[in-house]
Image 1 (cartoon, rainbow, N blue to C red):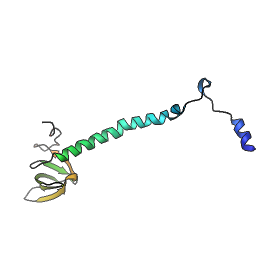
Image 2: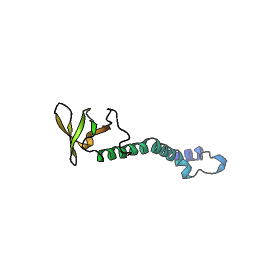
Image 3: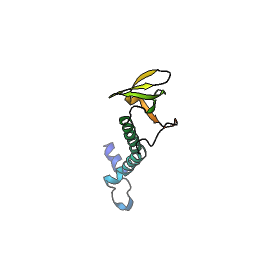
Image 4: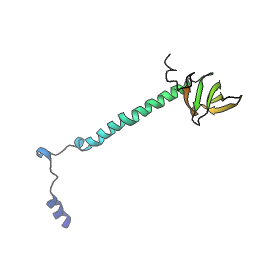
Length: 117
């Protein structure tokens, strides 16, 4: 009984122009936030992952690379998932292909135009 009186006392929520708001307008801020997050966070990250995957697929013998652990070296053998790097002084290291962070240009900087020949 108490809850029925309380519900009648509260009445309905005020609505602009006397028309009830539709369910689309209720969820519009949530939808708008998702769209903003998609274009600012999700889409650029997917693009970056796609570029990194393409860079890993194009690795070959003679490429200068840097690993995720910070080792600089030259690829001397490229198998399916394992690369053999020459890191200097006749030291060879085998690393997983997925642990290559970047391909370096001959000058020593990161090569961003390797795929654009």
